[in-house]
Image (spheres, rainbow, N blue to C red):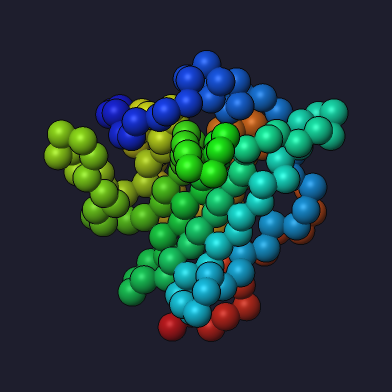
Amino acid sequence: MSRPRRDLLTDETKLRHLLTAEKIIHEDVMMEQAGDTANRQHYMNNMIYDQDYSTYQGLSVKFESVRAPGFIYHSFALIYKPNPRHQDVFAQLEIEPADKKSHTEAGGIKIYGAHWVELNVTTDVTDNPNFTWYDWLREFGQRTNLTMHGKRVAPFDGELQL
């Protein structure tokens, strides 16, 4: 099922090009505590390279994980920010339980569970209960043509899961 989600202000042709173009992150992907909240970790990077090692101006990724009772929410997003007052989240993979409401879209449509947003269209994602954060990161990379070199450290890695 697909549904419109959010309005994008950047031209769709530009965003589609950014989505399909080869993108590379050379640095380690290490989830770190976000602020003083122990249950939230994130990773942000605006050094996204093309195959010629030039950076994509205004392009960034943001990965976020939030530990909640009984599950961990994950978000993997590709963001285009052409100026300081404007940003388009034009590709995003969100992972949470099927019975957990993520948000309400325009027209009152309630979104539950794992889903993928691409250029203003939300589609369901089959949640695999055996998938780890690493599997979802790989899925995001495949959907966005993003290659990540270096080490990857999952959120809450090494912490005791209570």
